[in-house]
Length: 128
Image (cartoon, rainbow, N blue to C red; front, side, top):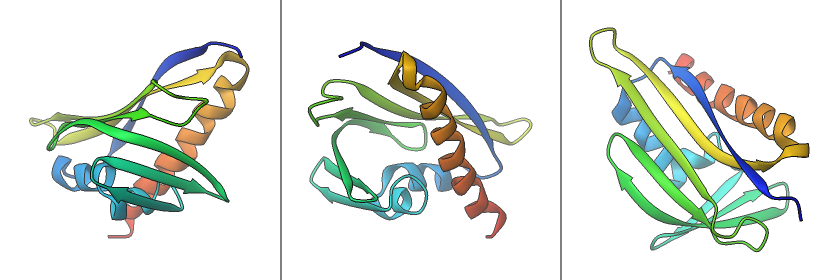
């Protein structure tokens, strides 16, 4: 198996940090943009996409700043997914900062996947 490499992407969001936090920390919020279905039991999250599943444990969260998951499925076990909210109070601008991992050969695909998923998240705000 090829080692996974960490990457970070930042996506501007026109929304309050509290609303953004709800969409990155709850099963209902995550199911609107991140995965097709999200089941949560205690601190265990099961994400479903087109018949595939990945499981993660919520390591830490702080409203309205970040959520941090640790993947528990075989392939990604031990790797951390962090969704952080940055907010500039003066300008009112917010951003979602994603830190994740991918194989070097899948890096372009994975980053494009994040861009597609966060575009879904941005559409939620534009339709509100």
